[in-house]
Image (cartoon, rainbow, N blue to C red; front, side):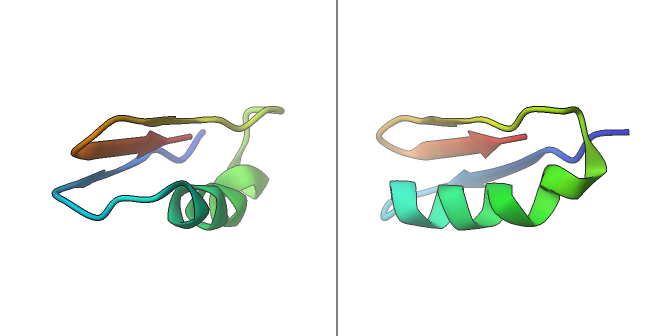
Length: 44
């Protein structure tokens, strides 16, 4: 089972998304990724 998270609001930055993604990679799948836009960040 994979882990998915999301953040909404101002101040979402790439560094935070990369750190949060790294905490979920042990849950699979074999790859990790994230999406960053002006007011939303999503990661897997």
